[in-house]
Image (tube, rainbow, N blue to C red; front, side, top):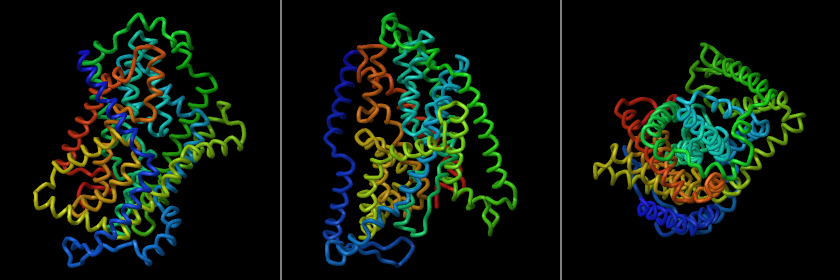
Length: 510
């Protein structure tokens, strides 16, 4: 056992060292942008014929006078018109208010107060759905689950790991539309426009599949951990009695919900029910104001196309109502402070968008993305590699890359311009290509030391056990993370064989 753990530690440290040698994503995309310009000159004149047509697409060089003029006159436009930018900033304005008010943390504490026999199921559900609070869930859920395990005289480090895996390996799924849906759909839309200028991928594109994933993975993971891991890893040890955490506030205090917080939470939940009942009423009732005004349809409709503003309004109102009653928001100025804080969390992302947006637009303008996608699609068709094996390849490639680059939007920004057009020419929708990426991108989040929050997790673990290290976390997280991957692939296979829609108006094939 010690030899296997030693090998695992060496392997993970090797990944950590290799990943640390990668440049910051800003420089990575700046280099890709420059490389795209050079390659446009190298492959100038290369061509491919669009499948089913006689239209020939030819690579154009941008390393010339005309190309320089295009770069300089479009750099700012490429940045400001990048689809995910506005969507993400608008969402973070709303989430900033809910985070400042404390509503989301109280929500997690409330759900955690479940009977012990449903404890593991609740942890996985809370963790997976926690991404509605973005990265905040990563520093909220694991320490709460550790404290909960400690109070029940179970191994708190294992409780910490379970919460961490639930949040990270399930980060892409949710029972609700979250920031991940909005961010990735914006990037996918940009890639889709390479082959279809008016193409749009909605935030709801993967909703049916991700809703089902959240339920299925939570149930299976809870059963697996209970039957095969709790006895070995969840056992209490007397060393936890004298731990640093034992001297801090008790678990009961950490999970305690004050009277004003409970009152605020109940009121906010009543508002939540009323708000979404109103929204659904306006879209489900024939002739409702949120249906398409011309076709009277739900897909497309102002509800689907305007989901981000609808979510923004909900988060601002819910956060404000909770905060006013709980006392965390005392004036309108506090609401603005929450909004500013939410946008402030995205400052590094805004900077990163400059090279990402221009790399994608350069790749598109030169026609390299289209030519490459057509040639790859033709080659895969010739090899007969177009079915479930292809889906597995996309998932596993995403999984491998995720060990080194943990930012989901960063990876998808450089993979989407190739994968989306390639799968399009093979007859698969951009919505489905995005889904394949999301499965691979999510599973290994919890087992890579490259995750920015990994050191924080070790800090939490050391409060209970000073000997807990990388090997401790990885060895306990690995079986659950791999289970997520296996269950997701099995669910994908069932979805594919049954030909089910993956979201409202979204299908596997075009």
